[in-house]
Structures are given as structure tokens and as C-alpha cells.
Length: 281
Ligand SMILES: NC(=O)c1ccc[n+]([C@@H]2O[C@H](COP(=O)([O-])OP(=O)(O)OC[C@H]3O[C@@H](n4cnc5c(N)ncnc54)[C@H](OP(=O)(O)O)[C@@H]3O)[C@@H](O)[C@H]2O)c1
Image 1: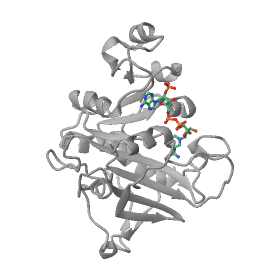
Image 2: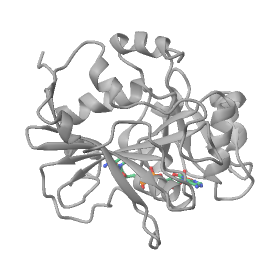
Image 3: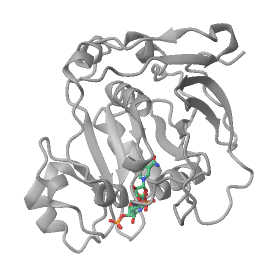
């Protein structure tokens, strides 16, 4: 079995040169990705919910390779951080486009990372929530154990069939139109105790979260690849975000040309950015 790659700290500068070797419980990496505790989140209007996005991009800004999925542009260093980000989250939130393209089923946490979840008061089960207004959802997703949570609306054409298939308690109804209010969707997840949110995309969902001022941080892996092509960027909103969302680095890691950053976002919607992690400098 190939061992996971070591990750070298580039930022913060005071920790530069420190090497994070793989370990079974990944305690050093886990410590780099705290979710803010109750009452310390950045968004005063939703103090208990924290939304982290994890995305991978090529050097030329592509969110997929020629295969139209992210599998061809990620790498072992990204997989290592990806697993830790899941292990510290309560729920993985994805758009239906990503569920369809990437073949999502379950999102299990490796056994070695479950003790840490228990110590943080989290259940062993990481939930998967899919946002879908009208589109089809893959069989592999709907048959997964545990069943996914599907966030949808009462206008969904196949609503009754979906409720029968995965259980009415797994279908979370937010509104009655074609567009789901993401702030309300986060409230519905929080009401189920799912406050540490990890969105794994795709670009449309991340763009909508950013536009709504709901994105607290971005974990971004740059793969040392140039692919050109008609790939989407990692944030694919229609229209500009103006003023732009600004960000400051919490850390930057490196492994064999792969750069892995964690950025704390200031959604520039009037509330201050949170400070859940170490700052660069
Ligand atoms: N580079 C990366 O890190 C990364 C990560 C993830 C995905 N990807 C790639 O990105 C592509 C898929 O991303 P995408 O941007 O096309 O799709 P997406 O954001 O995953 O999903 C879009 C879909 O989600 C639903 N949705 C999202 N927000 C909604 C809202 N507010 N109200 C109602 N429905 C909402 C709709 O589903 P319905 O159509 O069912 O109504 C919509 O069509 C794939 O190629 C995938 O491989 C890359």
C-alpha cells in the first residue's frame, strides 16, 4: 500500500518548514481545520452554522479535467486533506449536478478518524445532503446506506416517489418553487444538529452560497496541471460577485507541487470574518 504523502507547511510563516507526516488519527491535520465553537462563528445572523467549501482546481482554473469530473485533476495530497475535512464535518452538502457527475453514494469516515469525531461530540455517521429542485438523482446515491438527505421543494415532480424510496424523514422540504433558499436549507440542516457543513461543490452551488453570503471558508487545492478546455471554474455563479468576496489565508500546505490552502472568507455583506484558525504571518 502506498503511504499518504507528507505535507509541508508554507504558511503561516512562523510554522514554515514544519512537515506534517501521515498518522492514523491525523491529529495534526485535524487541528488545522477547526470549526468554530458555538457562539464564535463569523456570521452573527447564523451563529451556529459554519460552511466550508473544499474544491480542487488546476493552475489554469479548471474545476474538471477532460473527463468532466474532478478525479483527473486531484491527487494523493488532496485525498489526504479531503478525508480529514470529511472527518471533522457533520454533513457533506453537494449540488445534484455533482451527485450526477461524480457518482456520490456514501461518505463514510475512515475508522481511525472516528475516535476524534466522538471526542468532538460528533456521531460516527457523516451525513450526505444533496440539493436538488427537479433533476434526476442517481440510483447509487438513493440506494446508499445511510440514505442521503435530499433538500428539495414541494414542487418536485417525483416528490412522493422520492419520499417512498428514501423515507419521508430524509426528504427536507424547503419552499415550493424551483429555487431553494440556501439560508433556509442551512437552517433545516442545523435543526437536525448538522452545523459543521462541508460543501464539496459543485461550482454552481458554491457560487450560490457565495452570492448569498453563506460561505465562511474555502479549502482549495491547486493541482500542478494545465488543461485548458471548456471546464467550469470552482465558483460558477452567473454574474459578478460585487463587491468581491475577500479572503485571508489560514494556512498553505505543499506536497510535490500540489498547494493546499485554507482561506477564511469575508462575505463583504456587513459581518466580520470569523477567526477559527491560525493566521498567516
Ligand atoms: N473541482 C472540484 O472541486 C469539483 C467539485 C465538485 C464538482 N465538480 C464538477 O463540477 C461539475 C458539477 O457541478 P455543477 O456546478 O454543474 O453542479 P452543482 O453545483 O453540483 O449542482 C447544481 C444542481 O444543484 C441543484 N441546486 C443547486 N443549488 C440550488 C438551489 N439554490 N435551488 C435549487 N436547486 C439547486 C440543482 O439540481 P437539480 O437540477 O436536480 O434541480 C442544480 O442543477 C461536475 O463536472 C463535477 O465533476 C468539481
